[in-house]
Image 1: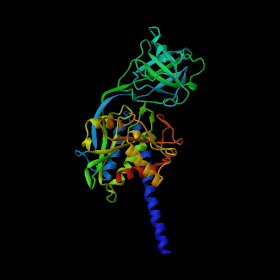
Image 2: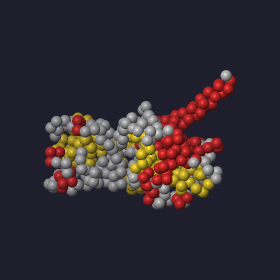
Image 3: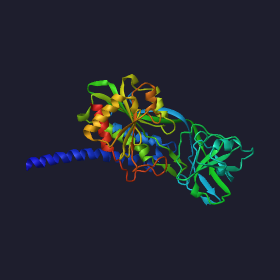
Amino acid sequence: MRKLTLVIFICFLVIVTFSQNVEYAREIVERLASEDFHGRGYVKRGDWKAAKFIGAQFYENELNKFNGAYLQDYSFPMNTFPGKISVTIDGHILIPGVDYVISSSAPSVNKTFSLVDLRSKGSNADSILAQLDVNNDDKLYLLNDKNTRGIYGRTIQNASAVAIITEKTPYWHVSNGAVVEETVWMKIREDRIPENAKSLDVKFKNRFFENYQTQNVVGWVKGSRYPDKYYVITAHYDHLGMMGNDTYYPGANDNASGTAMLMDLALHYSKKENIPEYSVVFIAFSGEEAGLHGSTYFANNPLFPLEDVELVVNLDMVGSGSEGITVVNGTLYDDLINHMYEINETNSFLVEIKPRSESCNSDHCPFYQKGVKSIFIYTRGKELQKYHTIDDTSDDFPFTAYDGLFGLITNIIEE
């Protein structure tokens, strides 16, 4: 009986210890996605506040520093909207982030526009706008939500303002915020436009930073056998920040989730009983949403020799997992993906590991372009599909495949 009790206690201890990792990750997601960090963007220095928080965790876990600091400073150009944004259609007040978004390239504006509906003209927005007459300063053109990828947010000759009409809550991006254009672009939900609407009144001010000062956060654990060889775990901690002084984008899955797993892995390997044979570096990037700025800067200004990197594992949007994971660049490395299959078959960590071809869609890319073996992992599942909206919150955050993905990564490093 005493022996059985001991076995039960040990099993319970193992379960609780592993569960605590998930709870730690949940706490990190909740913290980073809270209003205190203002969406981890470039209004109210949300990125700086998040970086300090991550650095404090690295310090508490006694991670090593490169060059005596956890922060790697750099800058990039960024357009922001720090003040109040007001949009009304025929006197009806629209809610920012819910009913509409403003392109990150927009200039300041305070004007009432006459609405000109061009949706019946077809779906080729480029050709439609190219036919506009001159002197259209007081008109806002409504277009279908199609074929605008190449022109959205850019200056359009003879068009002061353009609105893309969407069926759902519009996504917001800050990737075109490196310059301020002359045309004001918006995305507006179709059901928020009254029938036969005549005018739209819009008022806001932009603030452009030619060199916005930001930072990556870097810590590492020294390997016991191969201290000069590195496994690198990366995740971007930034998100979209604030659109105006009231609307913030929490970014729980994108990418507080990947940052939380990175920090949990850092906590794991900081413990004496888990010291790895290879050194493990943990890099939390800013500037990903604005154009992979943080990872590009690091790859061009590495704090250790990139030729000594065994593998880069980038984690971005890992909050779901009911359908498994996708490994971007997985088809490039047969040895690695086959090893991942073997680990998963032995341990039943994940429902599926799906390799994907090369893509420059997250922070693994600048390393891969430098010749470093690099993959990007994201989870899949219908339980978590919020993306680039104010609804990407930490409420009831699933972390469906958290334990399995954590186990897969640690097995890759330790084997």
